[in-house]
Amino acid sequence: MADRKKKLLVYLPILISAGILAWLIYPSFPSLKSTLAGASGGWLAISLLFAVSSYTCMSLTLWEVLSILGFRLPFWETGGIALVSTTVNYFFSSGGVSGFATRAHLLCKRRVPYGISVTSSVVISVLIYLVLSLIILQGVLLRLIDHPSFDLTFFEGVIGVMLILGFAFSLTTMLFHHNLRSSWGRKIYDGVNYVMYFFSKREIPEETFLEFEGQLNEGIHKLHDRKFELQTVIAYVCADWISTIFILYFAFKAVGVDISSGVLVTGFAFGMLMTIIPILPGGLGAMEAAMTASYAQMGIPWEKALAASLIFRLFYYLLPALFSIFIYWGLKMSEPFYDYFHPENGGECPVLGEGEGR
Image (tube, rainbow, N blue to C red; front, side, top):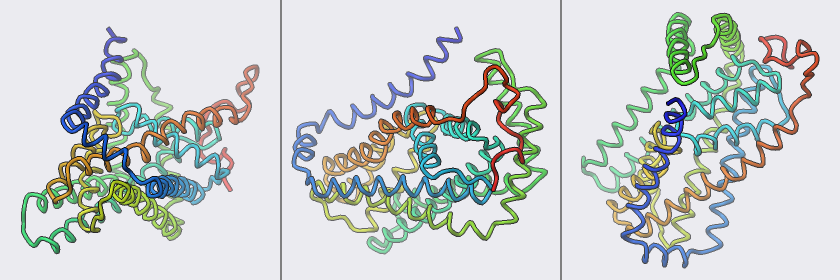
């Protein structure tokens, strides 16, 4: 029974995504095929370069946050961990939990405590969603300037901004409000234990949670002391989003569409909103549907909008996900030696202060 539940959780989201993609592609397959066949190789190459730029900025973001928290790892390792932990969410639909667990595991193998992993992940998530909310707001305003009417697109954008800002505000409040963080930490711990026991009949020990909570509090105190260094992190996050938008922009150029910034950002924002749907891996299918419908509503031919969104999916999601398999293998091969005969010599993830902080 448990194996059946696990298989359902893995395969059902994939089937849903495949069904959405089939619904999108099949009716316009001949024209879509013709559009993709005629795509410009030069513009595609530039779009791919911006995908590399985006993941480089993503890696710099994690590297800088870990440095602020006192753990400076080699950049190639940090970049690999950022890539693998991001792309694992494209394979498994878990609301980002699988990516966080992978990042925490790989960092732990390099003597970075779980509390530091959580702190860095929450800080990065807050900044990512704050910048995304500004991008959506910009798209709505640019769209309003081009077409001064309060239509459905305008109100959808406003709702999107409110939802993302609310999520980012909630994370920020939980991160910096001690009593609230402690209360919700306990609730999350109980919820995770309930889910784990439901599927595997195992639970996280109480002492492990208390140790983790201490690590988290210590990491947040470090962040408070060095909060002015977050300006560099914010710059990396902004550069990451700008690079991501340019992937889509040059995908449109490749299929012969000159698109204005207002239209580009508006459709991009609605597509990104769909990627946070927990049940779908990387928002597969939902993102393409939202982008295509949004751009078609704004006057771009359906097959060209769909072609651009599929190119974006290929360069930003699929190719990095495939590349990350080899990166993960390299990270596992380069992990510090584990003494199986004397595990007390450093096999466990350290408590704060035992790692290689600078």
